[in-house]
Length: 207
Image (cartoon, rainbow, N blue to C red; front, side):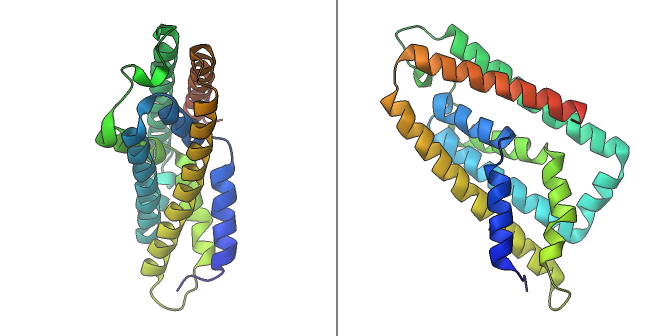
């Protein structure tokens, strides 16, 4: 069974706390996606961690990441997804009426849309696959069912990350309620869109 669970929890928590695509995506959903879309994004992102860990346990992600072509295609696809989200966020922020909060615009996608967005963003991030292949196995012993142990760690990885993102979005939501002026919300939307565009370009370029 998995060993060093406390160390693994700390590792995955620190990884989730690092600024990146998932954090920017969660903030975007708080600003304009709606509660159902946010919940869907959290679930989709967690599902991506489960899929990466299961693929790592089966040896599939190692094969994928060992192929330069497959890795490049995955990286570029992930970058394109992030850039599309960035463009949509910028467009919503810049075209929203001055008297209308961003979340009342057309950005709501519902739970399914949020789930697919979270899942595609996670699976389009090769760094998650690298972690699943290179780091996650370090916390599994050779005694007992290695496959099940790896999947169990993947579930824990998903739970820790989802917990952090839930806390983050709650804090952002509280701040959003306190700072509800349309101009401020528009500025946050623009900043989030720019961050998503930059992250997408970086992922696609392999930076």
